[in-house]
Structures are given as structure tokens and as C-alpha cells.
Length: 439
Image (cartoon, rainbow, N blue to C red):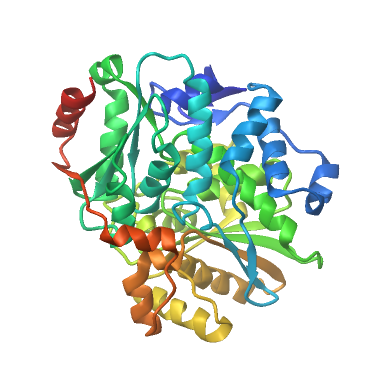
């Protein structure tokens, strides 16, 4: 499998280097040279395959024999060992539940796959692999769970102080072993910027084997394509066009959907649902991309003011003429943004109308799908429910005015002791910590 940088399409590399390196030297993002179209026979018979079989087939096609089939099957089957069921709200609206993994968030798919893949590629290496990850909520917990006690790997998680929920924070800060949490005085964008700067610092990369576990790493992105196929498999075949509504922050999930579409999955349209951090919906309206500091919201995992995967979205929608990339993106994606009060009202409405408890991120998706279907009523919409509502326990219980069930693997975290290292949002301080502790 060959990949290129979004900043230089002639800068090719192989899968192993892309996965272990994380970012190209030019600070672009890796993309596959070829996104193959899957056979029609496979796409027409999805219902006859298990989730793991689907994931293996998609991955095998993308990887182009970069890994022997038996090894790849072990990687996929060990990573994708929990379901992604589709819940029906009504005949027009469905919810794809992506929270049935260890950390109760969709990022378990990417994190577990990445951990398996990195461990495979890291065999025989003498130097420890240090995985840097910035999190706005769910990524850190999923990566921590995926890499916990993985041989030859050390995980360093940066998260914005006071801007993740209590249970999200406990998932990052209570595991110990090879997992270290850095609590940063700043926003998610500050954390993400510090991680990116680390990869561009020649002294750090010379002394420490660094890689990333954010969706900037191609190995996080690829497994996120799997569940689009799994969702499609579960939908009733009634002839209506299928749209996917994606609650979006760093836009890895939506980028993976565009890749699944490119591989032949007949997705009619995507809806980018954001909170007030609306730089992508704004771009879709105006053709102007205006990144800015993120604003804290109830749907905190989407509090991203400069989404990294936007570069990949542009790449996938690239046109040859001026303005055509924007037009191509608008043909594929519609964007909507909603505030916290609207989000709270949506959580209550979904419960009142359908008896379904949805988390704040899924609620933003619900609002966006409703808005879209007001104009395009003859569609089936799938909302990606990215996290279990219990991860936002206080807010959801306050909105619904009743207790909700907390899964045991989340409930036991409440009593565990938080252990985090406090840092400012200054890169030099972060670099010093890395050099003092890991070099």
C-alpha cells in the first residue's frame, strides 16, 4: 500500500512508515494513492457477511497485500470484536450505536485497530514507541484502553483541563502502567498543536520514536470506514436514498465515510453536524475556511476550531478548476451547527418521542438530520451515535430529570484516583517534559 502527503502528492511512503511515523515531514496528512472500488457482488450481499468479515474485506482491499492475509485477519478480528447495532427511531431516522467497545465511544474501533497494527509493525524494535495523542474527550480513553500494557509502547495523552467530563477524565487518568495523562491549561486545539509541533521538532524525533494516535494517523482513519458498511447492511432495503449524519469535531469520522463512499458504498449524501465550533459548515456556505480558537460546549468532543482532517476532505473532493473543490464538497456534504440549548432540547425530544436516550453529540446529529429531512423527506438517515450517554451523566440526567443506567465498566472509574501531570499550553514546557522523561 502506497500513501502520499496531502501537501505533496509525489512524496510516497509505505504503510508501515505512515503508521509508525504518524505525520509526514511536511506536516501534511497521509492518504492512500489508491482507494479501490469494492466488487458489486460484495456490496450487494453485505447482509450475508459478519461485521468482522466486512471489516477484513474492506481493509484487505485498501492495504493491497501490505500485510499477509492471516496476520491481517488476526489484527481485524482482535480489534473489531464488539457490535455496532442500528437502532430505529422511526422509518426515516436510525441511530448507529458506536459505543459498545471498552471505552464506550466510537473511537474504540480506531484505537484498538491502531494498537493491533502498531504492535504488528513494532515487532523486533528495541526502542520504545511513544504514542502522542490529544483528546477533546473520547479519543484519549479509547487509546488508553487500546494500548494498555501493550509491549514496547508508551502512551502520552494531552487533554484540556476542565473541558472533559468527569468520567471521560477518569478514563484517561486512572489506568497507570504505560499510560500517562498530561492535563493542559488550554483548549483541545492547544493540545493538538503541541502534538503536531512535537512531530516537527528534529531534536525530539531524533531522540524519541514518536507516533500519533489521533485521527491524523491513517491507521485510526481506516477502521472508521468499517461501520459505514455495517450500518448499510442493517438498513431496510426500501429504495430510498441513504444519508449519514455525522457529529463532527476533527472530522475523521466524516472523512472515513467519504472513503467508504469512494469504495462503492452507495451513500447518497453526508451531513456534517457541529456545535457552535462551525468552521466546516461555514466553509460549505461561504467557501472560506476560517479556523479559530474553539469554544467549550456541552458536546465537548466536537470542540475543535481547526479540524485536522479538513485537509483530507479537500483532497478527496479535489477539483481541477478554481472553486471546483468547494463545489464538489457541497455536492457531497451539507453542514449545520447548533448551540447547547438546542442540544439539550434535542436530548429531551428524542427521549420523549422515541424513548431513546441519546448523548449530546448524537443529539446534535439528530437536529441536523431533522433539518436536512425537512427539505429532503424521501431519505433514510443514519445518525452516528458516538458515545454512551452515561459518559455525560450529570448533563443527561439533568435534562431528562431521571437517573440513567451507567455501564459497570464506566461506573467503577468514579472511585479511582486521578493521576495527571499539569502543564501549561506552552510547547517548550511540553518538550522539556518529553525530553526529561522519555529521551
